[in-house]
Image (cartoon, rainbow, N blue to C red; front, side):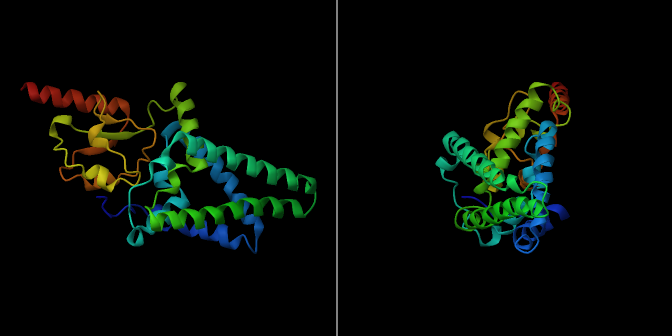
Length: 251
């Protein structure tokens, strides 16, 4: 049912997985490498205030790694329980409590030479666990299985919710936009190629946009739409697209 198609449209998405390997494996010998994860967490949180889950689909090193496994993935349907609120919230709480416990344990080293090494090792080790578990899920289910309940993804959704409520994302957040719903032939290919197995063709809103907080704006559906009528646009552009089409129809 689901198709294996190219998802690597930029150099960052094609080679970003190297960063994951450096942090996860290199951190065994140089723990301070793990401190880079703190900057990643800050980056994805700030980005999502303005652009939703754009980081997941275009910048995330783990996402790059998982998508690179697509050729050997079974590419099966993602189990519904992994996408449930219980699994998402439960895993976020587990992750945060686990990190808090480990950071508290190394707090006693504050001010010593070992502190940064021990702190960095926590995040390097976390990166390694995600690489292994997420990689196995990518091979035996589908590449973006881990992303369904990834704590960082959940943090992005929370950050995006805040950004949306206070208006920060009004002009910057882009959504999958269709030229006209009438042009869609409901072939379902956008769903078949979507890394998250979402269904844009069934859920366009009144502005001809797919407004789903889980959309990672990876453009895979855009590249594979047989009619080439999809694009990434903000809300204002989506409304303009709709008006232009309605005017053309009246003539």
